[in-house]
Every structure is written in C-alpha cells, then in structure tokens.
Length: 268
Image (cartoon, rainbow, N blue to C red):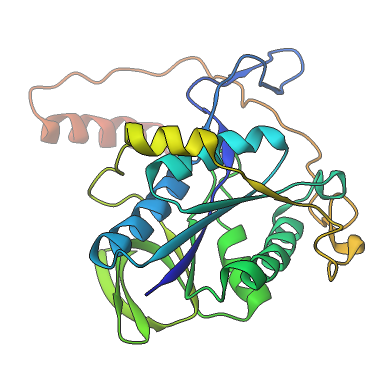
C-alpha cells in the first residue's frame, strides 16, 4: 500500500489573462481560476499507482485562501481520498521559499493524522509563476531524495521507478521512498471526474490548517517577512514594428537569400 500526498494549486487561466496597457499589470478581474495543469499530471500519476493497487491512499493539499477549496474538491472528484487547505493571513505574500517551508511543515502535521507518506508529488511548476522551485524546495526542507520532470511512475519494492524527461528523450530512474517527484506533461491526458466522485467531493469536509495548527512553524519564515524575493516591476516588452518577408521556391533558397541579406548588413 502506498500513501501519496499531492500538492495542488489554484491558478488563473493564463489563456484568459490580459495586460493593463497603462499600469503594465495583470488584469485578474473576471479571469477564471483552474487547477494548475502540471499538478493535474501529478495527481494522474498518483491515480495510476492506485489503479494497480486500490489500497493506495491519495491526500491532496493546497495553500491559499478559502477559494482554493474549489481545486481541492476538483482533485477529490478525480482521484484523491482526503484534502487539506493550508490557509492563514500570516502566509499571505509568501514567495517560493516561504511557501515550500510552510507546505513542508503542513506535510509533517498531516502525517500525524494520515500516516507517513511514501511520496510527495508536485507539478513541475505553476503556470502563473513558472519558477519550478516549490517542489524541489519541499524535498530539501523534508530532507528527501527527489526526481524532477517525471512523466510516468510505478511503485516497486521500496522505491519508485520514474520515467523522467531529459533533453534528448527520457530516462528511467529508481528512487528510494520516501521521496519527492515533480511531474511535467506526459503523452496522455489526465482522467476526468466521475459523477459519483463529483457528488461525494461536493459533500466532503476539507480540513483547514492555520498557523495555530502548525505549532512548529517560525513566523519569521512566512509571508512577506520570510520571502527574500521582491518583484520590483512587471511590464510588457514593446512590440517592434518592421521586418521583411523572404519569398522563395524552397527552404534552401530562402535560407540562401537570408544569409545574403545578413551578410550585406554585416550582421554575420
């Protein structure tokens, strides 16, 4: 039997985000929130382990305001058995370092109820920040071995066998449990919720962990105070006009014309 924790995050649908041309900031009003796609791949990886071993338990956790309950219920409707929300004003404004510190402490607290986890699964990154830091940092805080860019995973005796994406393809790595694995997009799509699970998820009670429940947490390492990252400015790069179109019968002819033009301008 495997006991797996999956970290999930509620993120704005980046396909719907627009930029305020005057303030150069993201316009979030009216933008729907979704389950971070890479976290969906991590949940699917856990679900596939459970397909082979139905005794596997999947617990999901998210850090954020009460609205994040929506993605936790979505995770319950797909494959998870239990969900926890980590939420407190003290945690507001946390960067990746503070977030991973808080989540690592939350995982330890959840283990008091759910038992020791054999694995912690995360998406490789969140689409709203694209840092790819929180998963590996959780591994460091917990002192666990980790594998990043997982595509597929299977449980073997005392370990996980992970198919990992690399620059020129994929490789297979075995990592002893307990461990942390972060996931990228595999060759298949995650499963959909079922009606039965959706109804059960809507009735499910989601436990909330505040700073008071995480008694060992250091407030100096949380929120803005515990976040060394500072975003000074966000802006949209100016669109440059101009350019030219090269017409040719074949790609080789177009390439030759391009080289000739660049040579005349002394750019190559």
